[in-house]
Image 1: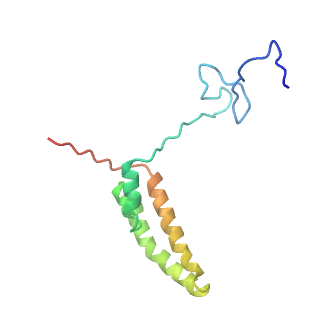
Image 2: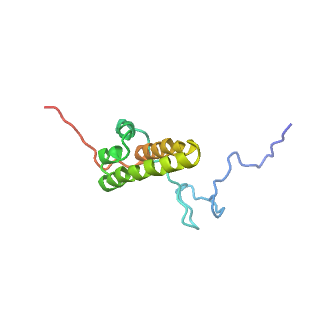
Image 3: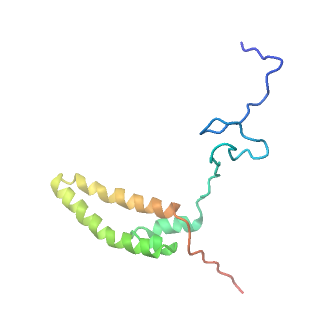
Length: 126
């Protein structure tokens, strides 16, 4: 059984997670002592994110779709090296090294899904 004191506050006072300073009620998302600022999550999956991830069946193509031209070209070129390295690792490890390819492929797809969209196309009908 818990007891409640007569003068206890009903809510806890919010404090900074870095320096434990009390946050001001007018600015509850910023610390008055240190540089901590609460950032809201900025990314929510959109249709373009999912499309770019699907385009990454060919690694780098999804990055090109979202406007990351240089990174897309580097990933496309790097995919050849990734396949070569996975084949070498596969020969050296009785085939287990080939599991590096799905790992690389998944990482590219996740990266393009979370990357910001630099090439937003708005189609209008008229």
